[in-house]
Image 1 (spheres, rainbow, N blue to C red):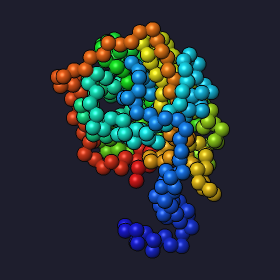
Image 2 (image 1 turned 45 degrees about the horizontal axis):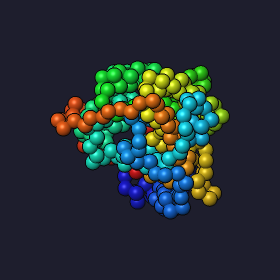
Image 3 (image 1 turned 180 degrees about the vertical axis):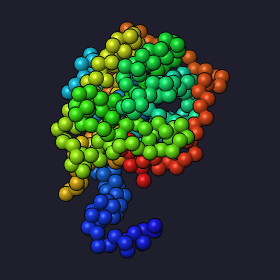
Image 4 (image 1 turned 90 degrees about the horizontal axis):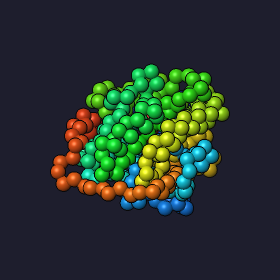
Length: 322
């Protein structure tokens, strides 16, 4: 249906105006306003230009929550992410780049939807082998184990390890109390060239619609972060070299970013706000540095990326790219 036809059909429906028409009308000006007014205090993160041997990315990890819950020794700094959602972060940091001195280990199938071919020496798609069908995610213990395997297999490569947590679906007791909420099944299917769909609403949709309590959502987010850190800390202990723990982006949990605006949840693409852009940068110096070699031959990563030709408007995982 055309926009004009939709307007005619729903003109007298206040719910339609509140949920669809008004957000559509203000979305672009609002984003431009946020971009104009946003003046981050932390340096912008250019991941591959930073100094590190190994890096661990915690998906959707807010700086403030990391600071409260982290127990890993190191120097905690702050950076400004180049994206407010994973697809934007991946494109901003890796599109058109060549880093054949680096291996990317990922639990997030989003990488395979962005058309990023032959950027790294190898890409280890942990989500292909360690997918949990019930929770529709990859648990941090599997991710830690596979990262350590890659570290030992490629001793002369830098390692990027991209964990799923604390991004929903949350895990732990509070998550059990929340009940069923969407996982990464939409992207998981999309990355395999299948029909992409959600099996449940996202936790942010449940929160917006009053189906779950905000305090319980915070509990589930924090518990998920603590569980992930419980696996990241012993993994970091295995690395004698300079290692960094960071995040690709943050998360709204009820903040208002515009005057008189509604509470915001999740992490829409292209939004300039500290809750989404301010990320931790925990530096563990280590006692050694890697002797890194960059290959001149064809990288090991030959995945055909079945979803590379689909529209970039991937509405997934709470990301709103439209």
